[in-house]
Length: 278
Image (cartoon, rainbow, N blue to C red; front, side, top):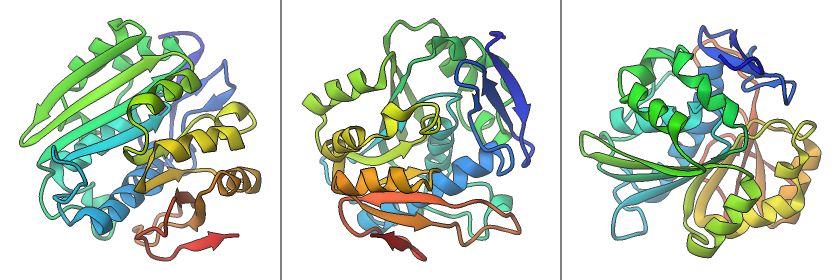
């Protein structure tokens, strides 16, 4: 394992890691790595998407039935890998949520996930990370991680699970450079954005008004951005970039106390128990 990254056990039993270069963990150890991923990113993003595009995402606004996702940043891969596992099964782990069923059926279509990661060291550690069974039992995990470990700056992994095809586009480098490139080809195409960079204190560039203005160009009119951050300054930056911003607290958690986050969109979002930030 790279000596700048060390694994950390989190409260829900899943494993996260500490990055010495950023002096920060990839997840809230108190919330749990898997719980944070599920409740702050996967569940709200898919619940909103189902409200917009049908209970099996059968009405995505493109002829190829493609769900387009931006994961900022790849990190340990929890968001990308958990999303794919959830779509392949149509649900998240039943023991984690009162109603684990999200889609009417497993997703039948294509998923494109675009993700930058500036710290190449992380890819030398991922094959040693004990991922949750929900991920390991669903995806060809070893093959995916081996591919990205040896990949060059720009790489693509193609896979298929059941009736779901997926492509993961990884960029090893500066997220802003990557997003500017995406803006030329995929402007307004992203249905889901996971805003999950290291904290504003550690990585302020990826939380600025200018950064959110770039995301505004990339997000689909019916898209959603999810983030763990509840920072007033971050929310103001997003509002000033044009987003509608909401305080989000998971309401269907089974006896688990999970800190809330924020969700954002160009329009009102299809989620319950939201409080809009003005």
